[in-house]
Amino acid sequence: MQYRVVTALSVGAVGLTGIVHYFVDDRIFQRFIGSLNPLAAALFLAVLGFVLLSFLLSQGWFAIYRKENLKGLLRSCGLAALFGMMIIPVDLKIVFPIDTNIPFPESLLFYPVIGFFVEILFHVLPLSVLVIALTSIFRNANRSNIVWSCILFVSLLEPVYQTMWMVSSSQYALWAVMLVGLHVFLINLFQLLIFKRYDFTSMYAFRLVYYLFWHIGWGYLRLKVLF
Image (cartoon, rainbow, N blue to C red; front, side, top):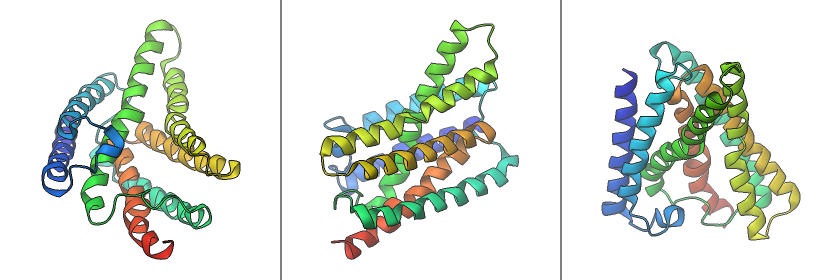
């Protein structure tokens, strides 16, 4: 069942990539992957995600999908909605650039795709590499402690990326950079805790719901409210 779930998510992400690229707007992905072919990148990440998630599952460290974890899925979505609403007042104060979000209705197709691939690039990939490396180096160490250490480290990757982008733009006050960094760090930390406690599906659902509030819903409204 778990392999069928990750296969379905991967096929769905690749399929939506093809629809956006060929039938909606082939420029949407350029701001994120440059001149790379979106469909080729999607296929690569889908295969990479399948391999890495299969490995994590085989080691018993993480799960892809557990039917009994419906409660975890609901908790994940509720927490994501809270984080999605928390960032809106920040935007009202800071006012992020007008092109922060992909416009509606293209956003309905784009964000499920980019959310899936962000989970692979910022969570599954570095977590897999770190866990494999550290358990190989420290063979006698407690594996649970290693996994938890990796979770904490991986939680820092996306907020560091986001804050570096904000600093490089030279248009945000220090308090704004720190606030956004903390916000993104907490999102990543809770996501990885959800991944460890429940499964990948719950972690991905967290990002989908967060994107629904922040990038899709507020992304549409902010153009009318702020600009």
